[in-house]
Amino acid sequence: MLQPDRETRAEWMKAVTAFVDEFVEGLEAAPASTPGRALLPPPPAEAPGELADLLAQFGEAARQSVETAGPRFLAYFPAGGLYSSALAELLAQVTNRYTGVASTAPALVALEHSVIRWFCTEFGLPAGSSGVFTTGASLATLSAVHTAREDRGATADGTIYVTAHTHHCVAKAARITGFPADRVRVVPGLRMDVDAARALIAEDRRAGLKPFLVVGTAGATSTGIVDPLDAIANLAHEEGLWFHVDGAYGGAFQLTTRGREALRGIERADSIAWDPHKSLFLPYGTGVLLVRDEARLRAAHVADGDYLQDLDHDTGVPNYSDLGPELTREFRGLRVWLPLHLHGVAAFREALDEKLDLAAEVRTALADVEGLEVLPSELSVVVFRAADDPTSERLFTAINDSRRFFLSSTRLDGRFALRLCVLSHRTHREHVAEFADLVRHLV
Image (cartoon, rainbow, N blue to C red; front, side):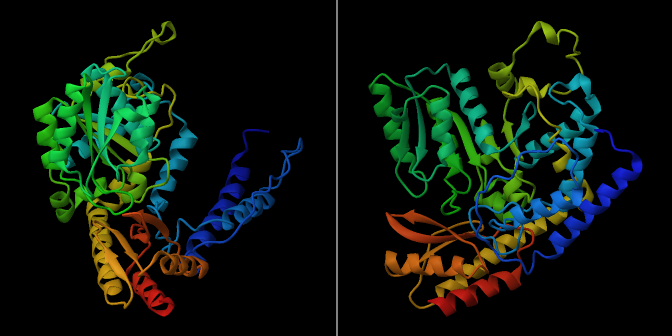
């Protein structure tokens, strides 16, 4: 029976709630990582299974992983997975409304779009700006590159300008949209050297190529460092280029006073990709693309078919299928709308400010450890290393092998470096103090 009765639903919900409560309450003491093996379970049986057995199987599989939901996951960009967002997902999935076009659920699309419009306001984008929720900044970037190509009339001779620290999703999006790898120009500098970019653009024009897109980074993956966005915006305006900002990690810091100062110039972007599943503490699969001009995004993506002729296209809110590559999509907006309204925006601003403070404390603590060098970093990313690569690598392995914390690594100037990012809503001062103590003990 695929439609359980009310009693069965209550039993299932009780079992799942108990599992969730035990999981959340155990996060503080849980190891930061647990080794596992990718063994395929048996295929589904013809007869019904028991939920308790299936929950146990799921729980064991989930245990054998990096504890991305815990307070000591400091690798890459932690995704918080707010409990309130999980509740929103339950509501969205049970009601199962179709929001690819507005006329099938206009009030829900309006609810989702109210968040998009608020984001546009927070980023200083003008009237006529808009956007769409995506599965992540990679898909948002793909749509942005496609829109820039269409808007600027670029073909295979088009050139794109990035730095060595621009996220690889830009190069991937360029390849998918038809640009050879050598059309992605790498501008020097830890932060983009705008003069060097200008010279490279002039050189490409002389070679008969068509510069059309420049990408600024609002929080590089390796270092958290922000490109000079205002200067890049000037360059884009002077050269007639589309200005895209990759704010996948750092975008949400726009909600804070310090973040607005660090990201100054982002309000001049033609498009911004960022991930609420990073710095807004939401579940994986929550990205967003914001654009300065909705009409340009629509022109690059709109399509039609005879089978859509019954739909009302005059609802007053966008058809999201006209703003991105997906026709079918889940109702993504509720997982963002509910937490913002339930907790209040101030709670998110305060949490982001806390992460900036904690990263500063980690930098100060590590700078006092003899034998360590703290490298340039920004926002809530911290990068450090020992005197040589073998020592740095041994320290990295020892930290992760402790299973108290989980870090990632990177390379700067060709050398191995340890990297941490303070971003989970569950990570607080006591956790970063414990991390600093562990490093002092291991060095």
